[in-house]
Image (cartoon, rainbow, N blue to C red; front, side):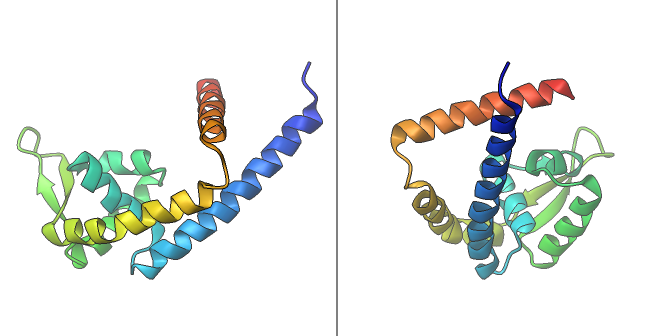
Length: 145
């Protein structure tokens, strides 16, 4: 049987690492004039295309009640628009606008570079190992719920 103290230590180290990395990433995002949630929505729409409003929260790990607020803010900034689904009028999609595309294309390369500079302390092998290990952990916990 595995030592429960090691599991607890891993949890603490993982939580602290996530916190400090996330603070750095969010600090950069906020300098762009977006909050992290707005950035996540625009990044999703940029890379995956129009999305049903009802599914955005699950894809960026945000409560569905908050999505309407975030979409409203981005729509006021003219970075996204609501589009009725032609097949089902009950469904509304969010789509990135040309202004949203321009913003993401301007800020995403630096965002990607910032993340790279934070992770660059790890070797390629360590990155691959951490990615596989954390994926395995995440999937096993997801299976429990």
